[in-house]
Length: 507
Image (cartoon, rainbow, N blue to C red):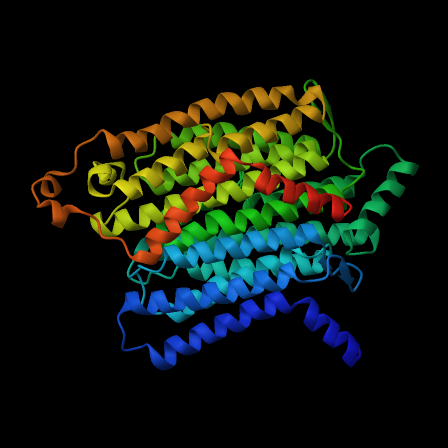
């Protein structure tokens, strides 16, 4: 590679470079100038620096060339990848804002560094159609998330959750790498389009599913199933959501979902093209669609039913995430252009609602020291603004109009039905499980709006009982709630951008 190509590569990866340089600057500023300052001030300054860097990367993406490809698809740029990368940067900014009032660690610069390094990993992940770069980016993301989970050194739960996350993650990476190696052996290429060409050639000579390809499908689904917390690869999620520091859990529950679902769609629909099979009711045909349909159905059922019995809001959100993974997998089962648009709208609005919910949980934990349902008793009397935001986040996750979660589910279900009537059984199951989810979301809201505050709070003066929220954290939560309402009432603001990006990208 000559100097010109290196310059081209640098220009191509400039948004990621901006994010990484920002991470190093935030770390240096914290270590060199802010060690003697209070934790909250250091978090605020680091969050502002990180947010400015992410904003700079967004501006660069908005002015990048619309179509570009380097090294045979190892690095790919088009309007769709730019849109997803902008969404990831917005999630990173939101995470930094809601963490501004945190006090769980003295290592603020290192925390912001890891958030931004994980964001850069996700940006590389969604901007590639090569198995090698996809795997390396996934591992960069995963290693950052393992450390973020263990970042609260004073919490045994945090260390235990990180260990479980690391062990399950290492095992899933082994499955994924094994599947990728089989695909390379099958096609003699790591490029997703070339792998699809090899699959089509194999089916042209033999209409039955190749056993090697069948194993590759199963192992790839196992690897990505772990990343998106789908059943039965979800065992890490409740412990990580419960034990990780709230900003870390929020980032894991939102940003990694956006990146993982997008690349999961790309790998299955582009890389495994020709080996789809069918998930029509009573007419299953072997292929990856049938496998994902079963995983989606089980995720929706298990996630929603187990969430009902949870007494901690974090674990409730974890099992809710498993259920939502089932809903989002329906877009892969349909594997159409419309279902991709529905998936992107759904996963972005889900990320906003989950981030906001964890932001409120973090503030409640700072006041009460826990996240049990009883810790939310009477929150509406202590902080009407936070309670209203939590109301919006939970009802959006439940799919209640006119919030973004309702339109996301509606559009997703319509896109699945448009792909063929044979998938109606999945839609019926999804609607039934959505009705179940309303029960446990309302349980939290009942505690917030109906239950009385704890006795010690009720007996305190009104000024002492009022929850004081750091300005940046409250501003971030309010902006997330406003985004949910706006995208619910005017979904075209995001959908038109998504559809235009898909058309311009030739997908």
